[in-house]
Image 1 (cartoon, one colour):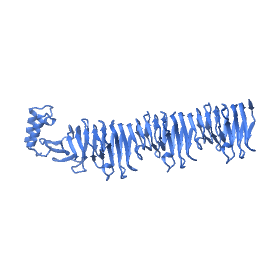
Image 2: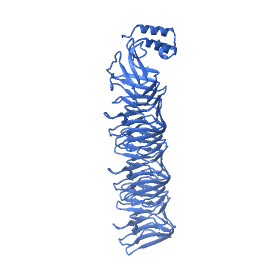
Image 3: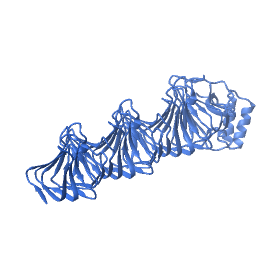
Image 4: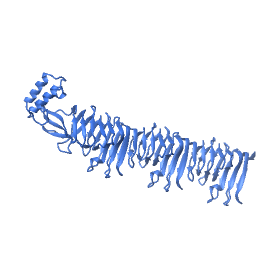
Length: 602
C-alpha cells in the first residue's frame, strides 16, 4: 500500500519515457501528476496488477501544446484492473486506458476549457461518472460497459477523434458524435439509458457521423436523440443507424429530432416519437421500420419517408409539419395515418407503395407541384384503405390529370373503405381494379377525375357532384376509359348562384363501359311537376331536370315512357313505385296516368 497524503507526486517524461508502476492500493489524498514536458517520450502511471487509487485526491494529466494526448497515460496494464476510488478525480489533458480495464467509481472530468481527456481500452461498470464540466472528454476508441456520462457548462463528452463502443451505458447530459475531423461512429449495444441529449453532428466535413447499433439495442430513458447537418450537406452526413441484422428500438420516452437520416441495413422499432420539431429541420427515413407503439410525426419541419420500408407504423402531423414522400419512394404495409400524409412530385416522380391495409383517419394528399412528373399512391398487393379520412388528389392548373394518381398496381385490387372519401382532381386507376365502398367526390380546380381502371361500386358507395352550369368545366365529372359498375347513392349539389332550368342535362360519368345504377339520388326539391332523374347508358351516366312522366330521360313523353313504366311496375322495380308508398298497386298506375296526362310542358 502506497500513501500520498498531501504532497504532489509526479511522473514526468522530461528525459525520456517514464513509467511509475502500481500494484495493490494507492491512497491519494494529494495530487498525482503525469506530465509531458514536450519530449518524444511518454509518461505513464501503469498498473502491473489489480490496483485501486483511493483517497480524496486528484490525478492530473498534462500534455504540452502540440504533443500527442498519448504522451501521458493513466494506463491499466495487461490483464489488470485499475479502479478509480469514489473520492478521486481524474482531470487534465491526456489518455486514460490501456491493455487492462478501468473501473471508475469516482469522477473523470477534464476540468478546464483547454483540457482534453481521451479514453482508450476497456472501461467497465463502476459507481462513478465520466463527465465534462469544461473541456473535452473524448471517448475515442474505448469500449465502455455499464458506465454513466454527464456534462455541464462548456464541457463536451462524446466521440470526436475515434469510434468508441458503448454497452449498457447511461447518459445524463449531452453526448456528442461529431465528424468535425473525419468520419465518426459511436457503436452501441444492449441498452442505452438516455435521460439527456445524444447529438449526432455533421460539422461540414466530407464524412459522416453515426450512432450505430452493433447488436439489438434499445435507447431508453426520457431524453432526446438529435441529428444535426450543416446547411448544404447531405442528410446522410448524420445518421441514426441500425447495423446489419440488428434491431434498434426507440424507447417510449425518447424523442428523435433534428436534421439527418434514420435507418440502415437493420430495423428500427419506434416506441417513442420521431419528429423533426423545427421549421428548418428535415428527417429522412431509410431501411426497415417495423411495428412499434410510437409515432412518426412532424409538428414542424419535414419527415421524409424517402426510401424506407415501413410496417405497422403510425403517422401524424400538426402545425407547419409535413410527413410524406418528397425525395424518395417509400413502401408502407399495414400503416396508419392520423394526420396529413403527402406524396409530392416537387422534385421528380414520386411513388408511395402501399400493401395490405392503410388505415386513414386523417388526410392523404397526392400533390402535383408542376414539376413535369407524376405523384402516385400505388398498391403493390391487394390493399384496403379504411378509416374515416380523406384522400385528396391535387393537380396544378394547366397540368394533366395523370400528374397525380391513385393507382392499383398490376393484378391488384385497391379497395376504398365505406368511410373514406376521394376528392379533388386527378387520375384514379392503373393496371389493377378498384372496389369503391366509400365516396368519390370530383372537385378541385379542374373538377374532374379520370378513371382508367375497372371500378366496382358497392352498395355503401356514393358519388358527389357539384354543378355550376351545363358546360364542361362548369360541373364536376368523371371521364371513364375503362368499365364501371354503378351502385349506391349519388348526391348532387348546386353551386351558389346557379339555378337549373327545365330540360338541363349534365353528364356525370362519360365514356367507357357503364352498367348498374344508383339506388338513390340526394338533391334539392325540383319545381312542381318536374323531377331530377339520373340515367345510366352503356357509355354515359347523366342527370336531367325533366317532367314527372319522362322515365326514359329524353326530355319528352311518348310510348317508350309507358313501356318503361309497365316494365318497372311488373318487375317491382322501385322506379315503378310512383307514389312512393313502398307498394306496387293500382295507385301507382293511377299516378302514372295522371302525370302522363299532364304532358311535358312545365
